[in-house]
Picture 1: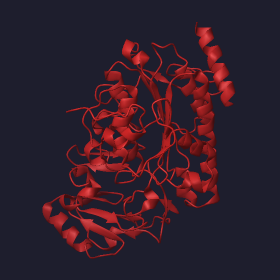
Picture 2 (picture 1 turned 180 degrees about the horizontal axis):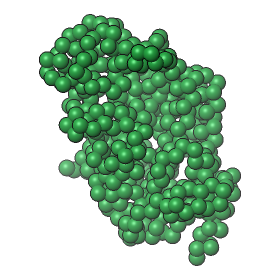
Picture 3 (picture 1 turned 135 degrees about the vertical axis):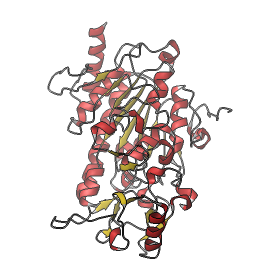
Picture 4 (picture 1 turned 90 degrees about the horizontal axis):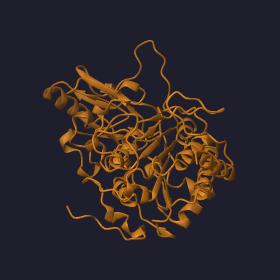
Length: 437
């Protein structure tokens, strides 16, 4: 039976034009592309889970909403025509940064509700700092609120797998995915697809029904060269081709799989040089992280607010409690106080480098801005599969609404979140409706 599984997998991988990478346990190496998959034993899929459909959720980091049409991303556009897509984009949550929005997608919560309010920030109550390059913080479940989709699945008897996703390396809401990897962006692009196919060719009892897959392009190129650069356009074409290979491999399995391709945010070309806040205000007594300000006393917070509020037309400053409700960014102490919000594609920081240290200009491309103020921040959404109506388009919607929609396709009962199934129910074949609370 096992040999038969791998024979079918080899055919699927061959059909997709990929090198076969079998499933493995942590630390085990297979072939030329070792993928150190970590296996957490949650037992077999329940009988109900074995009958459920499959969802493969793919993130293309920084894939701006208009890139697909602009650069002729034929595989993504075909996916949208086969199923549904958002031709005018999907609205990321504020701030439009990588970790906050990836985690919003899998929890249905705004960043201030799930706790990842930025890629790095200070938790004054815990006297600790979170940063995406700090492995100790990234793998510590104390930082993460909500119930990510893999934890929801595991808690309801369904196995899951994450080939990278913010939060997937930590134990959250009592669970880790059955299969996951520590983040390593050097892992071969095609090997990632082959690993997804390997998971889908496991025996039914062990086969994950919810799978995530992540690519860091075209975000890297967008930052380094700008959103309109030829290098960024080439990266768009590259990840589009990867989606085509993945789709071919998924189709070859014969399984009922909904393929959902999203991005976390867009990208804008930065205007001007750094805006350094300590040029406008005395930040003595403040902890800072990027443009986040953490005042020690109420007097300090009010003083800096008054110094900054008329300082520049390139940003607006609020006391945290007064940040406009539409940003959903006024309730969590991790956001700092006062809160500085850019009015355009401007690079803002609290401090420059220490005296004697060289300074560097901002990257040509940047994100993190309010998507309602800067439409370049809008993300992408494409989906097709047995649960999705063919040929539908959706108007721009907030990414918190993906969570109940994904849970519905998996047959899972989600907790109450900031999203609503009703927003995307029109693209579901069964016309899914919000469960009564």
